Length: 331
Image (tube, rainbow, N blue to C red; front, side, top):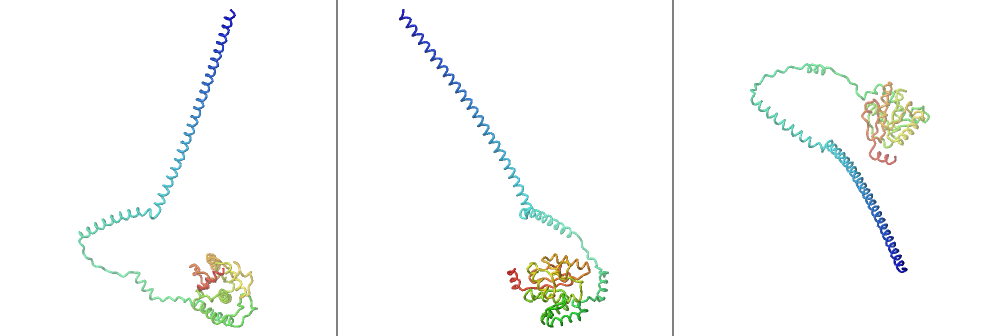
């Protein structure tokens, strides 16, 4: 009996262990299935993210391509407009228009020639009558118009001018009144002044004396004589495109005419300019105020504005190539 009980007990224990193992196996199987489900769900989630990422990238690439296409279309339209606006781009259109006009003109001339051939032309007698304008011209030619010569501009003041010439030949008067020449001039300088007054009529170009100092001294003599003729009713306008050149003009005139810095300025006797437009504007104002502008152009100026030539008194020094080059290198 004892053996049977022990055998039954052993069997029961074996069954219990088998059941436990089966339970453990079932639990492990459940864990595996859960893990597989989690892995599958993770895989599904990862795949969705990947698909969304790829889709977003495609959309962004598409939008970028659309923008690039728009930019290229805009560049194409700009190039087309440039080509059409350019002469070379319009040459085809011009050639087509010219060809069309040639065809039209050829046809019109052919039609005209055919029409003329069919006409019966009869020569008509031509009667020429004198024009009233011819009679007026004949009357005008019979009238003599006296125009004063330019060289006679200073003829009435010849005595005063020649008296100044004789003073300039004497020894320099370093204590003369302001605006009087305090230096002497040689015979060649006097001849140049005489030619400018009595042959050029106070307006013309003179060959440079070789340096700005000599040109300024000659101009000082002119300013002194014009001061005797016009008094305070004239103003000297000096044009030189560099401040250094204007400074040299100011120093020489100040020394030759006994002037001070106050004598140089818009409201004084001498005005310095770097631009020709300012000279023209100032000269117009002076003439509007019934005053006389006297314009001096430095020898370094290679171009002269044509508007300056309209004024009654002007002097342009013509510098040599070497003089202009040396002056350019110095400045």
